[in-house]
Figure (cartoon, rainbow, N blue to C red):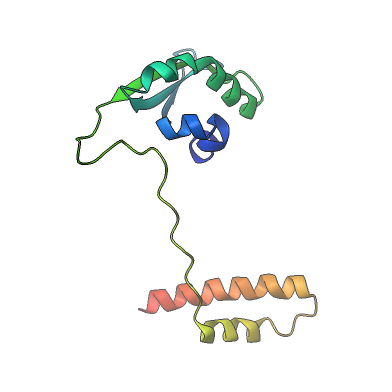
Amino acid sequence: MRLLTHWEEIAGPETARIARPVQVSYGREGGFGATLVLLTTGANAPMLEMQKERIRERVNGVYGYAAISGIRVTQTAPTGFAEGQVQFTRPPKPAPQTPDPELVARARETASGVGDPQLRAALEALAQNVLSRRAKAAD
């Protein structure tokens, strides 16, 4: 799972821009020696083929053992001229919403009796989450 969520850090920004992992498959016997399947466009496939060993070493370095014994490159059709190149980066996360001031005040009031500042801050955050979920469920 970490391979999917941290692909840019593992493979590097240049490789992550042109390819992404789509599958890790194990042989019939299981155990060590999985094959990592990378998706790329046809134009980038030869460059990715030359980098397979470096990518394998980086992925195995993250796992701490030889989890991946081989890499297979698969290609996708290029998009039409109007769409441009296929993007392999994730869309940016939406900006966090500002909490309702009334909700923040209620959460602060709920945790006001706690003396430890770190515990009080954690309880305020918990209260905000609980109260915001209740408000969403009521809508």
